[in-house]
Amino acid sequence: MKIEMRRKDRQLTEEETIQLLEATEYGILSTVSEDGTPYGVPISFAFKDHCIYMHGAKAEGHKLRNVASNAEGCFTVVDHVQALPEKFSTQYMSAIAFGKLQVVTEEKEKHGALEALIQKYSPDFYESGLAYIERAAANTTVIKLEVSHMTGKGRK
Image (cartoon, rainbow, N blue to C red; front, side, top):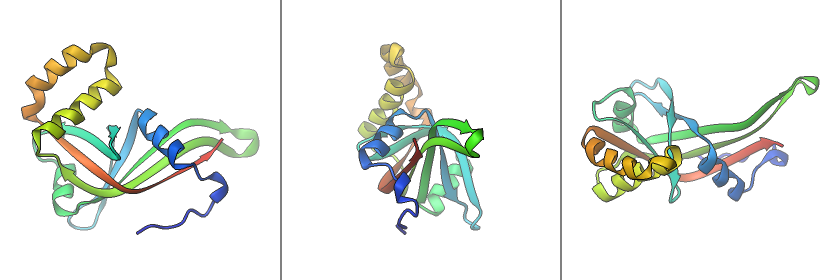
């Protein structure tokens, strides 16, 4: 369901929203449990090819059970936060991406997602990161949120 943003004066452009998703270190993945209970988990991620990639353990936990039972998800980031106490407000930039979640099963895509995470979080250790991927990929699950739409908002 796509809802128009109420505060259009704070709406970020698509380019600004993508830049925010590329630069922000962490976000919250929100899913829905089989019984309808909402679940949000903070997670590191990489934004690549209009998809958000996240990784975790191979063992099935709450997050993977939710993805298996309901593929709908959203991912939220917030950055550039500064309290403005004299204005009773906050300066910020945020983005919310909506879409379908799925476990990545194709090895080339999984490897590319893990490589994107290495490039984002450990660029100075790229070569050893690639070796780490080879050792750890079998015990790693990669989840992809294929973004259907996204919104960005900010008080600059």
